[in-house]
Image (cartoon, rainbow, N blue to C red):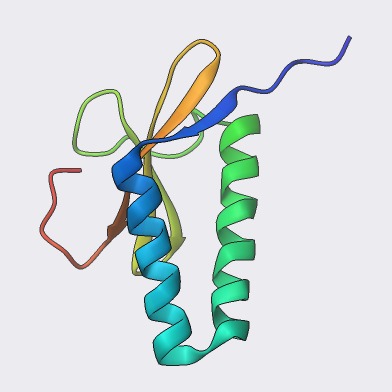
Length: 97
Protein backbone atom coordinates (compact mmCIF):
# COMPACT_ATOMS: atom_id res chain seq x y z
CA UNK A 1 0.00 0.00 0.00
CA UNK A 2 1.38 3.38 -1.01
CA UNK A 3 1.57 6.03 1.67
CA UNK A 4 -0.54 9.08 0.84
CA UNK A 5 1.58 12.21 0.80
CA UNK A 6 0.37 15.27 2.68
CA UNK A 7 -1.23 18.02 0.62
CA UNK A 8 0.72 21.25 0.16
CA UNK A 9 -1.39 24.30 1.04
CA UNK A 10 -0.18 27.85 0.44
CA UNK A 11 -1.24 30.75 2.62
CA UNK A 12 -2.32 33.75 0.52
CA UNK A 13 0.67 35.72 1.82
CA UNK A 14 3.13 32.98 0.89
CA UNK A 15 1.61 32.54 -2.56
CA UNK A 16 1.87 36.27 -3.28
CA UNK A 17 5.43 36.47 -1.94
CA UNK A 18 6.46 33.59 -4.20
CA UNK A 19 4.90 35.28 -7.24
CA UNK A 20 6.65 38.53 -6.34
CA UNK A 21 10.01 36.77 -6.02
CA UNK A 22 9.58 35.09 -9.42
CA UNK A 23 8.63 38.43 -11.01
CA UNK A 24 11.72 40.07 -9.51
CA UNK A 25 13.97 37.26 -10.75
CA UNK A 26 12.50 37.56 -14.27
CA UNK A 27 12.99 41.32 -14.25
CA UNK A 28 16.59 41.23 -12.96
CA UNK A 29 17.96 37.97 -14.37
CA UNK A 30 15.57 36.68 -17.05
CA UNK A 31 13.18 33.80 -17.54
CA UNK A 32 15.77 30.98 -17.54
CA UNK A 33 16.94 31.91 -14.04
CA UNK A 34 13.32 32.14 -12.84
CA UNK A 35 12.62 28.67 -14.26
CA UNK A 36 15.71 27.33 -12.47
CA UNK A 37 14.50 28.90 -9.22
CA UNK A 38 11.01 27.47 -9.68
CA UNK A 39 12.40 24.00 -10.42
CA UNK A 40 14.51 24.13 -7.25
CA UNK A 41 11.48 25.29 -5.22
CA UNK A 42 9.41 22.40 -6.61
CA UNK A 43 12.17 19.98 -5.61
CA UNK A 44 12.16 21.40 -2.07
CA UNK A 45 8.35 21.06 -1.90
CA UNK A 46 8.60 17.39 -2.93
CA UNK A 47 11.24 16.84 -0.24
CA UNK A 48 9.01 18.53 2.33
CA UNK A 49 6.15 16.19 1.39
CA UNK A 50 8.31 13.10 1.84
CA UNK A 51 10.52 14.20 4.74
CA UNK A 52 8.66 17.09 6.37
CA UNK A 53 10.45 16.85 9.73
CA UNK A 54 13.94 16.77 8.20
CA UNK A 55 14.19 20.53 7.74
CA UNK A 56 15.26 22.51 10.80
CA UNK A 57 12.81 24.20 13.10
CA UNK A 58 12.48 27.93 12.58
CA UNK A 59 12.75 30.50 15.37
CA UNK A 60 9.00 30.19 15.86
CA UNK A 61 7.73 27.06 17.54
CA UNK A 62 5.98 24.49 15.32
CA UNK A 63 7.40 25.93 12.09
CA UNK A 64 10.18 24.61 9.85
CA UNK A 65 12.51 26.47 7.50
CA UNK A 66 13.52 25.01 4.14
CA UNK A 67 16.15 27.02 2.27
CA UNK A 68 15.49 27.22 -1.47
CA UNK A 69 18.58 29.31 -2.21
CA UNK A 70 20.79 31.20 0.25
CA UNK A 71 18.56 34.26 -0.02
CA UNK A 72 15.14 32.57 0.01
CA UNK A 73 13.32 30.08 2.26
CA UNK A 74 9.96 28.42 2.72
CA UNK A 75 8.49 28.57 6.23
CA UNK A 76 6.00 25.77 6.78
CA UNK A 77 4.03 23.92 9.41
CA UNK A 78 2.96 20.31 9.42
CA UNK A 79 -0.44 18.94 10.35
CA UNK A 80 -1.74 15.39 10.08
CA UNK A 81 -2.78 15.53 6.41
CA UNK A 82 -1.28 18.76 5.12
CA UNK A 83 1.76 20.98 4.98
CA UNK A 84 1.06 24.69 4.93
CA UNK A 85 3.57 27.03 3.36
CA UNK A 86 3.00 30.04 5.62
CA UNK A 87 5.73 32.33 4.26
CA UNK A 88 8.33 32.69 1.55
CA UNK A 89 11.12 34.84 2.93
CA UNK A 90 14.14 36.77 1.88
CA UNK A 91 16.65 35.41 4.39
CA UNK A 92 18.38 38.79 4.56
CA UNK A 93 15.22 40.45 5.89
CA UNK A 94 14.34 41.00 9.51
CA UNK A 95 11.57 38.47 10.13
CA UNK A 96 10.04 36.51 13.01
CA UNK A 97 10.77 33.07 11.58
